[in-house]
Length: 254
Image 1: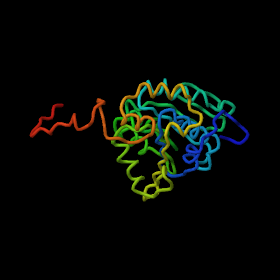
Image 2: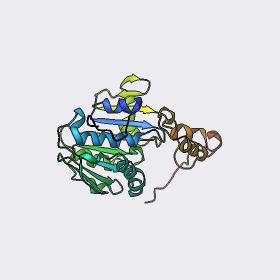
Image 3: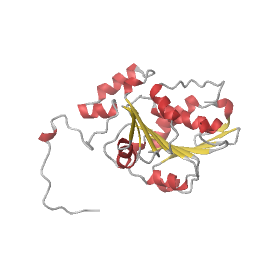
């Protein structure tokens, strides 16, 4: 945030790694209540206010959630809590306009085609691993201005498009430390942390999460930010007891 202004956001060490990175694609993989949405929103505010050492001002960005409900109930409350109001000329539920001319729009990725034609300098994808496919990401990327950035925060969601397109290339690249990686081409930055590394976490919230999580794999995913192979229903029995042989033939039904 701009020097001399405090909106209540004080990044912990894992969040600072993300803020300091300058790769074109930057991603935070963290456990629930780890502070990834807070970090992403505040990165967007910093870019809009003074460029954060990465962009010229004014610039234009977008906050994107996977669904309308996630935008309303998960993303907007964080935006409203940390909004740097002395710098904001006008703020609605869909757009923020700053006195310096920068703008941030707020969108859902529920209908990816609506993101076509958005020529932005940067985009923050909240819970990016929970987008069903790469359509929303690709539509933003196709319209991204030269020198622009795409960044995101997420809990893992199995081995989906996000893992193979962004996480795996970073893991196969350069290891900065035990939790931070950069792809071989230098374009993708990934840093990871678990729920307990957030010193500001709400103990009651973490307790609630633990009470609702059943099974070691799900606990690894939701609290320790591990990508695990399960998808769909979760059975509290050893995997070998639910494995069945593949059918000799099958028919696709659309």
